[in-house]
Image (cartoon, rainbow, N blue to C red; front, side, top):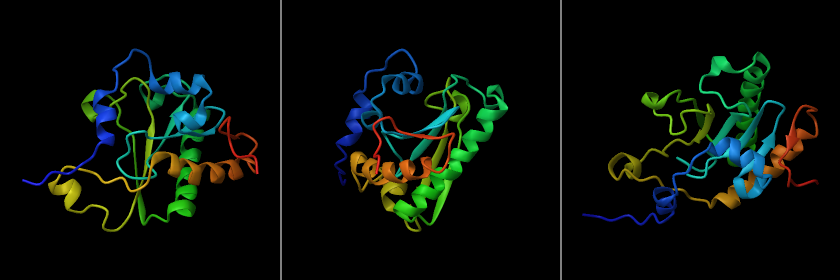
Length: 176
């Protein structure tokens, strides 16, 4: 039997299961870099997944704490999709993926880990990134530290915010 060392996973396994909502709580804290928040819109924000499937795994979440997309205002629905498109543009520039998985798990039975606050996943994919590790070893390999990915993505989001009035960079963003 082969063993694969993945110590980062223990942080997720041992993470204290707490009351509250990670999206609602993290957006209120105003520690955007620490919380991996990249962009603030009027109705939604962009955040990196702390326990990603692959490097560059982003999430677009509304500020509204709702469990179904149809409970969002039409403006929030439109902005959510606009931010998904922006995430794709930034990831294309920063990481050059070959494709993307986009998705939303609505409800626990659909696999939602956070079932009470909807969010859209934007997951970059590369040809060959599904290899023996996840298929046979049930292990994902994350090749870049989260903070390194943040430092690569954050200036690209900040630059795009300067051209779109409705968007704001993360509160601690690069101002170049």
